[in-house]
Length: 174
Image (cartoon, rainbow, N blue to C red; front, side, top):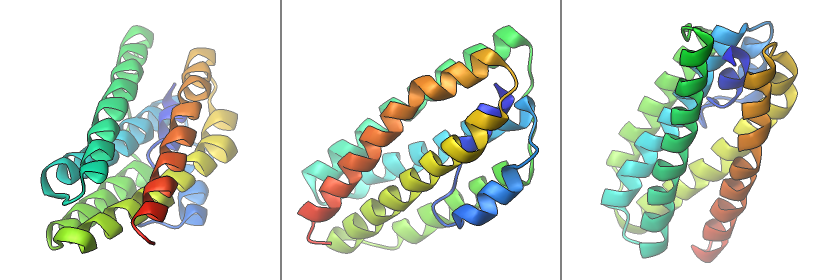
């Protein structure tokens, strides 16, 4: 469970190589922290998109990101509580949190179409990086079978988010 959470927390501002390198050798408690952090990064950006976007489609996508990532965090929290695992901060989770904060700060400075483009572009890059981390690091590193199963279970949602973000990107003319 700890390792699976690690994979889900890839920040869009980080290069995947850095995230995967940092996530190597993580334990389940560290994975849990990564997962929760990665989801929170997208929740924070999604809330901003809901309130600041000028596009109804981008607002709706932001709302979906909040709903879906809150749901994943709820499942992860329930699992770690049941397993009596305390998420453990680590370099990857801290880097994700910092990258998420930087993204939100940047987005808050933008308005209109510039906001929409920056938000959607970040979501495309972020979800691709999350999928790469889930596939290459988190699922393979998870020791607990239930944690690994949770990562496998939520993976299709990240694929759907990526495809939806790419569709939005195209519709915005980017």
